[in-house]
Length: 531
Image (tube, rainbow, N blue to C red; front, top):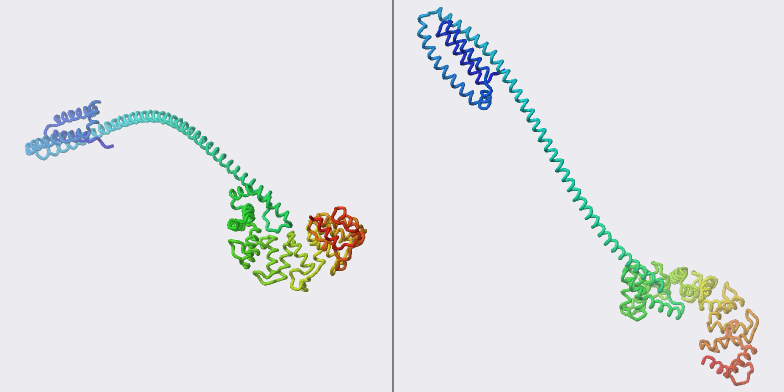
């Protein structure tokens, strides 16, 4: 273990002093000097607490000062010893020098051993004390650190608890605010959704009402003037709903089509055409047919353009519109805007007829029945005419109340045709059906059957009554009201003529002799039935 600097310096001074004393004095003097040195060392190795504290506080300064003082004392003593030794050297000679040297060596060795033992003991004590103080200081520091840590931990825990409480309060406030904001947003969204749903429901209701009253968009011809008037009346009734639907649902084609039809019926063609165009863009097939009509007939503001009309009709046909198919068939039949093509005419008309379009069915039936629309009335490649193919079409139409079809069936079973023989029974049945509709020609035809006893027993009174009823409508002339047999009108049955004259006389219209001769007088009287 190394000695402190101050201790090492003082020990060195003591050793040097002992050496010098041996050189200058006798052995007794040397012993005395050694005792003094030992006493000094003993005094040195038992330092006081104050000295230790001072030495500890200013160790560096004390060590430097001790070294300096010892060095100065040594230098002065050495100089003095050298002078004395030099003065005695001559007297003592070689033996004294040797003895002195031996003594000095022994003294130095003894002093060094004693010093080292003392220094080791002092160092051990100092080290033990330093270690004890260090341990004590470390323990105190550890206690202070533990106390500081405990205080810091308590403070941190308190702060953490306070922060947590504040954070929880803030979080609760934020949650409450968020819930309130979400509730408000949800309420607003629900209100908005409800409003939108109500608007959508109102728009859908308007659309449904528009279509329910006015019907699905159709460009088909009306079967009668009454049907046309009824359709226009319904359209006027549906207009408010159609307008609402068109505004709320601009992509729905049906309301646009009905608004266009209303404008067209009112003669407002400049308004009708754009509406038809929008309806066509929305996918309404019938709108293409109406646009084709505008170009086909040159209705203002559209110029006549048959080729463009054909394109619109073709688009309508491709989209499945029966009226577009039938009209395009007529364009091929007439060679208008396209080359004449009987086969294409029949194909398109058949498609329209299969789709249930009465106008196409009656025209196709008449093509099969009489070759209408075919050059020369005959096309062997197409098998036209063919009355057998016409019959199913005419029967379907007749059963749906189409009077034109019934009249064709009456004529067919009256005269017969290739593959369809005449039939008084079938003729009579269709005549009865036509008369039941109130058709003047049908009533007159039934009268003719009663007159001639065709398909039933002859009944002059019923025949005369039917003739009178038909003439009262003003739509039948006496010269044309009676039918034909084998292609010609037979003479009046006398009994029927008498019954007819009798009714005219009872009405005050006929004042001449009732003779069964329907001549000019009878005819003039019959004209009064419609007045």
